[in-house]
Structure formats: C-alpha cells, structure tokens
Image 1 (cartoon, rainbow, N blue to C red):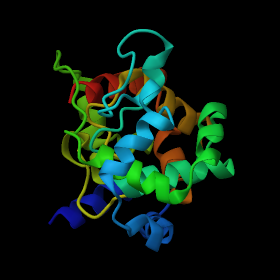
Image 2: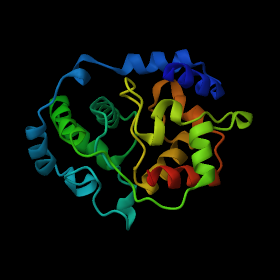
Image 3: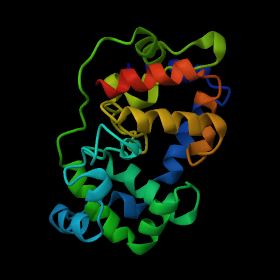
Image 4: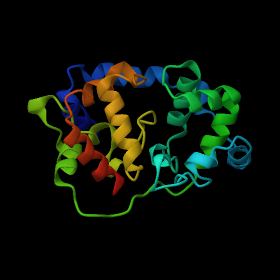
Length: 221
C-alpha cells in the first residue's frame, strides 16, 4: 500500500521513479550496512569536535539563534545517510569547506561509529507552532500542476522517514534555517549529491515562499 503511494506521488518528477530507486540502491555499500559501536562513537564526537555544531545528543548546538542554526540536527538520523554525506563531503560531491576538512580527518569506521551513536538518540523534534497550511499541503500532496512532487513519498509522514529508504534523510524536526538553505541549494544546483538529481528535480519549481513554508512546516514536526 505504502509503495503504491510512494510511486504515485513521485509521478510529479520528470525522472521516473525507477531512476530514483535505482540510484538509492546503488549508493548502499557493505560498509554502510555494518553495525557501528555507539560507545566509541560517543567518544569520537568529543575528540573530533562534532558536538560543537551538532550537539552531543544530535539536537544541534547554538540553536535557535545565530548562523549556527544552519547546522543540521543528527539525532535519530539514518546511519547510511550520514555515511554517504561524509563520503560526499570528503570527495567534494557535496560542498562545505569545514565539513570537507572534518570528513578527510576521519575514517569510514569512525563515521559508522559516530552515526551509530546519533542513531540511538531520540529522533529530532521541533517546537510545535501554528500549522503552516502551504507547507503542509506541499509536503503531503505536492503540486502536480507545477511539477512539484509530494515530499512525503520519500521522507515519510511528518518527515520521519520511510522504512527501507535509509538514504532518504529524516527531515521532520530539523532546524528550519538548515532546511531552508538546503532546499535553496537543491533548487539552484549548488547541492547535487542526490540520487539521479532527484532533489534537484523536486526543488526546481519551488518559489521562495514555498521553501519558507516547507521549512516552517517541517521544523515544527
């Protein structure tokens, strides 16, 4: 039932769902599936200074004020997704000067252990607020007339994920400034490290108002 809904919602893409699914499967490696050591990961979070931006518990540091707000919350995030992002920062497939330096200073084994720690934390949760009707509608239904797919198809109800899609990040409860920046980067092409440009296609027809509404909606989940 859920699979049928996913593929129906993805029909708003100009790229067929098979391309997205193929890209997701291609990115999963044996290393990504290895079980990490969360206790060692907790130690590495201190020694590698992850906590300065993301917080020891993955709920972010410095939120909600200041430029730090653009740093991601990692609490409850899929380990496979985190490993892929670190590899992409390391290779330059995803651009961020500070994260590139950090990614090159640690091994995949380290990342797997760090990700195991964050995965065990209570899933990121936002502060409830007034319902953003535009953001909720775009997230749950998309806008087929404009070629905007429903975000829920890949990111799940309330942004808490879809079983089995471990390279699709949890986005519900994420920091709104981080969400806003990532959506703008996907739209502009500044960020391009998704499977078969799926997020670039999803975001290309979003207006500034759409992005602000989606970020507001998701940050409250």
